[in-house]
Amino acid sequence: MSEAKVSVLDWGFLHSDATYDTVHVWDGRFFRLDLHLDRFFRGMERLRMKISYSRAEIEGILANCVALSGHKSAYVEMICTRGASPTFSRDPREAENHFMAFAVPFGSVANKEQLERGLHIAVSDTVRIPPKSIDPSIKNYHWLDLVKGLFDAYDRGAETALVVDTDDNIAEGPGFNVFTVKGGRLRTPGYGVLQGITRQTVFDLCAELDWPVTIGDLRPEQLKAADEVFITSTAGGIMPVTKVDYEEIGDGKIGPVTRQLTDLYWGKHADPAWSTPVTYPDVPVERD
Ligand code: PLP
Figure 1 (cartoon, helix red, strand yellow):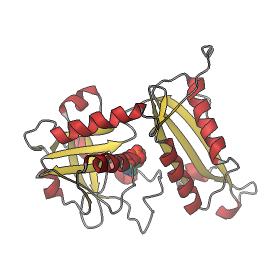
Figure 2 (cartoon, rainbow, N blue to C red):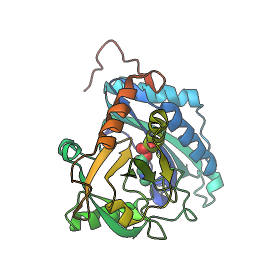
Figure 3 (cartoon, rainbow, N blue to C red):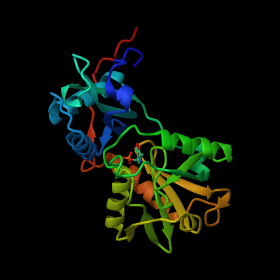
């Protein structure tokens, strides 16, 4: 990892002109790799980027990164940057797009203690960059709003943040989507958010359980009045929230819906319909 490099002239670095995706490996298996690759290829197409690797080749590169790293639980990132033009042209059509991938140990939005007692979240009045500026369904590195939200949250003694959309509805957080549970019905914002793969996985689990989910606007008051709140991310899965802006959610404890979905979510990581095994080398990788 310490030898991975990107040119300072790459528009990915200079202008945040890039798309990426992150998939995780749990217990030696990729989770829903196909959905992550679909989103990554869709993003590149919308940004008019082209790389010379096929989907199968990228799958091979990602598996190789994990196998060579030896990590059994990993956070695996694939990135396509605009790159730079060989003649320093300012025309993005002339840039040579650049593909990169890496695997690092699995990381989570919430630590062990937070997973056991629920996260404390603050709602920042920072507005997430609107879809008319940046299409949020293209996974991107426009994070200044999310990072500002994080600092707002820390200033208020919270552990992470949610930012709002242009109508002050709840949007998403730094690297996660959000759900509420009220009277047995789940709700998650639909506007101005990344369509997370973990969010999709919650929809799929709810379909199996025959539980109703509504995709729609979520007011900050609705969030605070919910019976349960949880967030979803490849970096941690389904994670409970028990406090919003100093107020306890429900009875302040992790609720039964969140617990059941979390158990089902992790159970699916061994299911061949939802996961793909990584083949590790027999011989341990030698490191300097
Ligand atoms: N929203 C944003 C802004 C993200 O960056 C992410 C993931 O990094 C998510 C939501 C959650 O998406 P996923 O479940 O695909 O990890």
